[in-house]
Length: 420
Image (cartoon, rainbow, N blue to C red; front, top):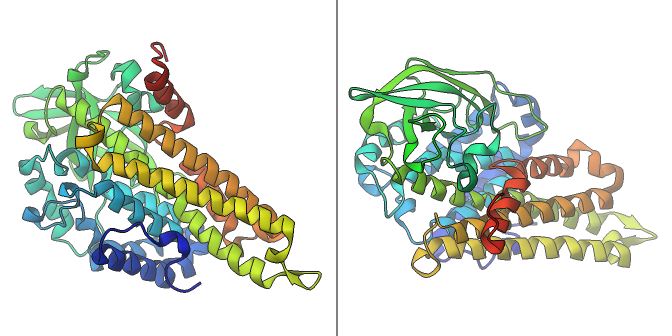
C-alpha cells in the first residue's frame, strides 16, 4: 500500500508531526525494509544497521529530539505531547524493524531524568548534549538497570526499594566511585556513548534516598562493555554486560540527589511503557503484508480475503491493532497531562502504564500468530518477514520486568496488594 496505512491516520496533532511521520516512513521503506532480512546476521558488527541509524539519527537529526533547544536539541521533553509523539515515532520505526525501534527509543532514555519538565537539570544537559549534537556519528544512550543476580528487582521499587542493588556508588571527595556489574541494557555491547547507571549508595538499604542515578560516559576508565549476545531477533538492539571497576565521575553527575533520583526513575520506568508501540509498529507492517498476500493469493478462484473464514481472522487482527493503538494513545494522553491525571511517577499512573504495555504485547503477539497461520508455510518463510515480527514482539514482552512485574504493579494499585 502506498503512503500511510489506515492505522497511521488521526493520531498526529499538527501538519508538522504528519510531515515528520512521513519522513520516518520514507526512511523505513527506502533504507531499512529492503535490508532487514540481513539484520539478523548483523547482530554483532552492525555493518548494515549502523549506516541506517546514521541516516535516521544524524542526517535526519532525530538523536537531538529530547535535548532542550537551549542546548541545540528539539525540546521534545519540554513539550506537552512527549508521550504521544514518542508513540507515533516508535510505531513508524518498529514497523520497519523492532530492534531499531528499541535502540532508537533508548537513545534518549537517559535524558528523561534530566531533560523532561518539570525537573530539567541544565548543568547536566549542557555537559552531555554536545555528545549528541556536535557529531557526525549516531550516538546512543543506555540505562543500566538489570543485574545478573536480581533480574528485574531494580524495576520492582514498590516492593524492594532498591535493597537488592549490588552496583555501588561511594562518594570520595568530589567524585563518585562506581563498582558493579550490569546485564542486558539496550545499546550496550560497545554501542552506548552515555550510560545512566542505577546504583546504591548504601548496599542493602531499601530507603529510596540511597538509590542513585549517576551518569557515566562510556569511555570513562574502568568501564568495560562485553560483546553482544546473539538473541532470537532484534539484532539492531545490542545487549551485553557492563562492568564498572573503580569508575570515577564528578559528584554532580548524579541526576538530582537523594530521594529525587528514585522519584524520577519511576518516571523513566513509566514512560518506558510507551514501548507498547514497539508491538503495534510491527503489526502495522503485518497488516500490509496480509493485505497484499490475501488480495493476490487465491483459493477456488477467489482472493483469500473473500473467504469467510479468512475474513473473520483478518477482522480479528485489525481489531487487535485498533484496540491496542487506542489503549496506547490513551496512555499517552495520561502521561502528557499530569495536571489532570497525576504525576508520571505515581503508583496509579505506573499501574495503568504497565497494564497497557502488557495487554498490547500479549494481543499483538496473538494476532501475529494468527497472521502466520493465514500464510501457512509462508508464515515461517523469512522472505515474508512475518516470523521476524513474531520473534520481535515476543521479545518485547520480556523487557522492563516482563509480564510478571506488570501484573504485580497492576494488582498493587488496583487491589491494594501489600506483599507482592
